[in-house]
Image 1 (cartoon, rainbow, N blue to C red):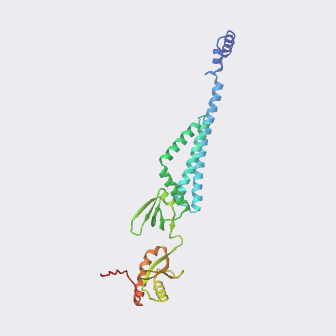
Image 2: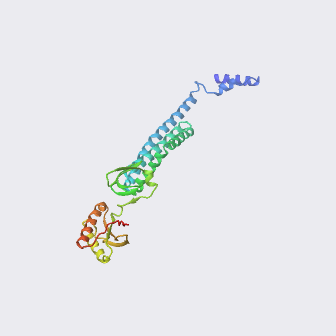
Image 3: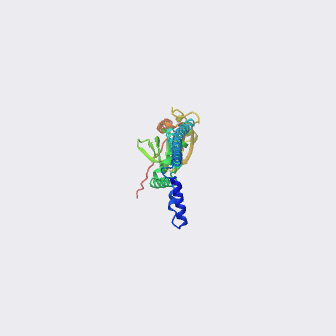
Length: 295
């Protein structure tokens, strides 16, 4: 009845040229319009319920996908730290998408939220540009595995045994016992020499003898001496090469193959055996001399 009276009043005001305030008031639902508010409440409650269900399902799916990513990478023998990191990234991305979808369902404008997140990500990326570069390089090293912990490599301008591969830096130890920490971007930005990939490494030992010595005899003596070393592999065999006619010596290079871990030790062992064998054969080993002329 009240609505009917308000409607009549609005029509009368419109006929008299008065603004239709009553009609506007009549068009606006009041507290007495229970049907409208009940429908509105049901709609809002339904959207909130759908948003909550979306969050729960999205959270569960994100966890399941994270485990799937980690398990698949583990089967492919990818480093555990990389697998967990990538799994966490996928999980958080799915959770973020789920939250945005839930907010949109309850009527919240998500365009501004996405813009704010994008701007924040860009600012953080610019501020941490160097660290992110090292981080990306660390992920590449752990994913592609050009070397592993315990191997001797030359990378980033340094040579040593890899002690740890981190997401931002790689730690190596030199034969002299020094610890070197190299940013990962410096490693991936240059060439990498891995001395342990093949499993064995060739060592070169230079030897010089007096001029006039029989080349064939010296080659046989040096090869036999090198083969006596327990560190030298039988296959490939020892090779002796006549490399140079120096200022005061005839120069040879003894090339032997060893396990990569024995590369340092074999050089002193073979060099000692070659020296003893040459002395035993009475073959002179020259040394540099300086002649001073007298007036």
